Length: 235
Image 1 (cartoon, rainbow, N blue to C red):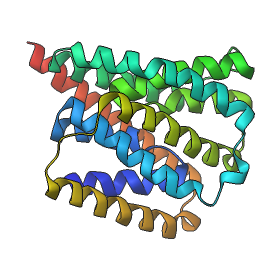
Image 2 (image 1 turned 180 degrees about the horizontal axis):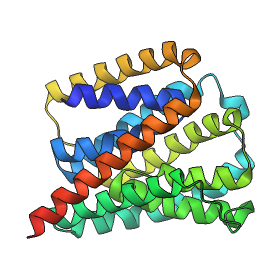
Image 3 (image 1 turned 135 degrees about the vertical axis):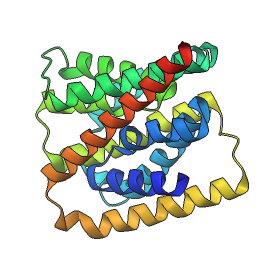
Image 4 (image 1 turned 90 degrees about the vertical axis):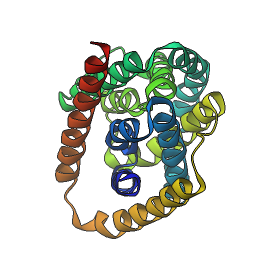
């Protein structure tokens, strides 16, 4: 099951520049537990972002990325601190809520005038850093910022990869590397490579709107499932 989750997440991440967390975090949390699932998602998303950025680094908008990254660096430790002190059922419910709300915002194509310019970048980065270290889903605030900035897909993907590298490095540094068996690490690494290769081969053949619809549907389902498990455990 772990391998299948990572393959699908890596496939989606390669197609869109982000999305590994939205797809994989709910399932990884159910399989491995809240903290290991979130941190493994941080590790995997960061690695595949590095690979993807090797061909698109010239299109990174450093002027916009610097405030995003600095703000996320400031709030990542806060997210880690909060996650470490919550009981597992509460953390499960929190992850489920964050994923579900984030997907709802992205699905609704929400436009927030305040999320423009440097102040918008700082706000998006701060929220994204907290969400990434606490729940493994730091991409939606960046997505909302990019939508409000009017970025094209060509601009969105490499900047998403750059942001993904930085915020996931911060998150892994704050949370530590997950304690998994050698077999689990091997399965995850192989699955990550397989998913990336499939995504690279399929990218020219799959319409973007199909990919977007699949990502959001799976992410919403996963978020609601984790939320339900957390609420059930609180009874």
